[in-house]
Length: 326
Image (cartoon, rainbow, N blue to C red; front, top):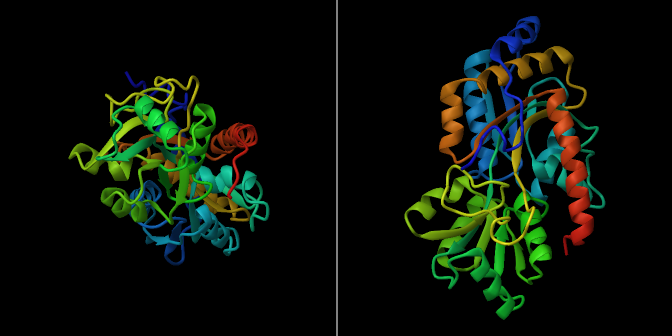
């Protein structure tokens, strides 16, 4: 069974411990609408996380928080826009595993530095990636899919929301470990993948689960594996890639709020306190789980330490698997 506490061993932060920081930071309030830049198209898990946060931050802080989708280059377009934005608390980034960690090891001339250009506010949630097939693909298990790929080298295709995304990394690492040749097809976001996958124009997607759950549950798509270390609560009957023969395989996409690096401390404190409080709300936790995701509250420095551990992991994976953008 899926164990939420063991998934990433993330500490649950008690709401009372967050309130003093919130109170200390009351001197800062937004003077205009706060933008939360989502570096992908609408309809994916990144966008969903941002919209939940925008709604509750608007209520809690008493100012308007709005979502702005700026897709492109595996999230780099939106991330660069935030890195270059005025550091006054009015522009935030819904960062992803790609923008905050993976992309720096893939793109030789990244136009921002993920390790120095952002201040962490909080990690918000994590999901599992799924290996999601068009319903007519003649494979009903992960091992059957690998056998099909081996019988048709380079002929099967897998879609992801873009180069450098967790789907891309999961797919390439899966190919490396399983020694199969499947062609990567990068899109500009999950919303662009779904019509093509449903129509059979690509064989499969390796992507965050939330946007696909409806089509999986009504039989229009099928899922043969998840990338988490343990079975994922939203699809408890679906085995992990590790269970399916690739021992030790794990890739958990995650999403969190960041601000430009020079954002004033009072703004960061108030935002950290507010997000920490929001992530303790049972209603918000329920909404996140309804997406097929898990709340993962890591605030400020705890989020920084987690990102550092992800950097070490994915730099090693990318080098070992010789993952490139070609």
